[in-house]
Length: 310
Image (cartoon, rainbow, N blue to C red; front, side, top):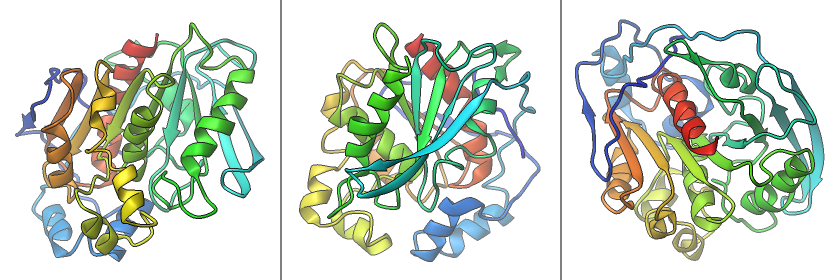
């Protein structure tokens, strides 16, 4: 799978950066659980397939480079907030392991995913071992967890965000991860990108930085409900968890949002970009809501978090 992103992209606060002319020769089919979500709910009709055929979804980037990854540990715990067992993975950077005190990235998976596939084309351990432009990332740990398909917001009998904040993060902190003076950030793709933004809005004192790739942003409840009836439990739930409405909570916080110009969530990302605080960097470049764009944006997103968490 084609890797690296665009670490040389300039920061653009409250503006869209139109990255035209980004090369690439590979045209791929809609990939992964996120693509299936969009197709099955009608968010991606024929246009996405046509975009792929005419090259709109092609994203070129140099190969990923990383040394031997650090260790990772997976397990399960019973979540009272979710009323079920959930799986998780904690990964460490090269040269580090359990017992080390490190900044923590909470990586939230996309729709149809789980803790095993929160990243596109990478395991958490390999992501932390990346070299971008020949430079290793600063040492950070990463945790992934099963959040279900409810868009990281509360549903009757299932509150994945409360699980992350009240159960997963304390478990990680007991292991020395994300404990002050070490910082904590959120990252996610699609549904997980929305969740990463939402978590920073809901817990601004807990989350120090955010990197969201192709966040699944809807601007109205009817739009969300029509595309995925399970995204929000009700209109009230949408209102309480709308990332655009509550964007003021991100004031002063480093946030990076990246989305493709041919992404079907582009209107929502634009609506968000129009109201984000000046501390937010918004990158709009060539690409669709597919794995090539996700993979290309993972390295610069990790670089961004490394700059603000370490």
